[in-house]
Length: 110
Image 1 (cartoon, helix red, strand yellow):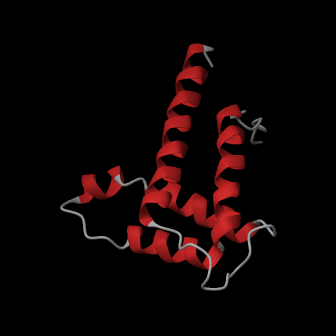
Image 2 (cartoon, one colour):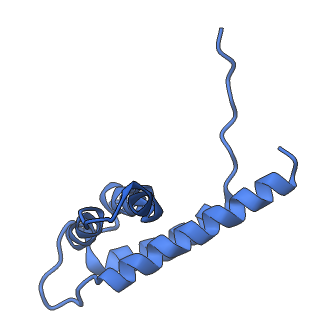
């Protein structure tokens, strides 16, 4: 019989989540999906470069944008557009906090 495994506690992700939501609520899910898909469909020199683009973090931002009801699906054109730079900043923050959590987890000896 399979053992039950407790979920890994990731305090860092909670810190970044609120910051990501603040940005996503200003732009809407449609804009986030559009920019994220453009990033995911970029051509890469090889498989390693593709993996280094951390596609799972782009998809995490999309998931959050689509699952949270406080993020509107579409906004009127008079709002500022969601830019590739804003998206890259969010993905970088998620990467940094995941590395921090990994180091913290390893330091605990778990």
